[in-house]
Image 1 (cartoon, rainbow, N blue to C red):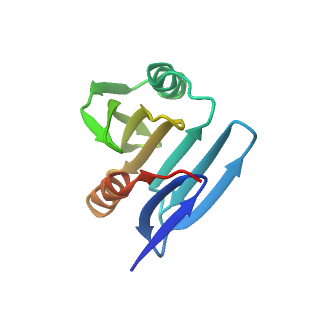
Image 2 (image 1 turned 60 degrees about the horizontal axis):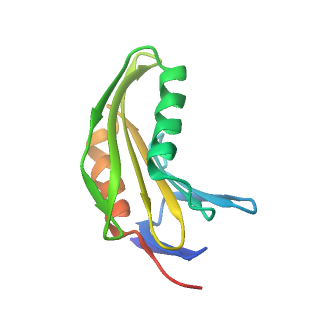
Amino acid sequence: MVETYQSHGVSFEYPDDWEIIEQQDAQEVAITVQSPETSFWLLTVFFDRPDPEKIAEAALDAFRQEYDDLDIYEGDDNICDENAVAWDLEFRAMEVYNSAWVRTFQTDLFSALVLYQANDLEFEETADTMRGMTRSLGYYYE
């Protein structure tokens, strides 16, 4: 079954057996949707609208600092009818191969980071689900 998240000016669909965790401060809100295993999908909304290129570079820097064996590929994506800065990542952690997708974009209301990650053991099961969550992402005026 599918649930719909709708808060903070954003909405998206997610599987009803995945857990939502929200963290908020004055300038941003982070919504993590955790699978029953280890895959996760993260949306961070920045209300002060920083440059999407800078958001993406900060995310990539965090991965570079954490993982020595990191491959980064330029991606192509469109989210909420906006061109997204898109990067696809592959890395090894604890003897398991992982894939992550970094997407950033800007609307007239906010800038956003979408980051989702799956290891190779779950990839087939969760990657399409997380892509679908990203495609379902929308925003509205509160």
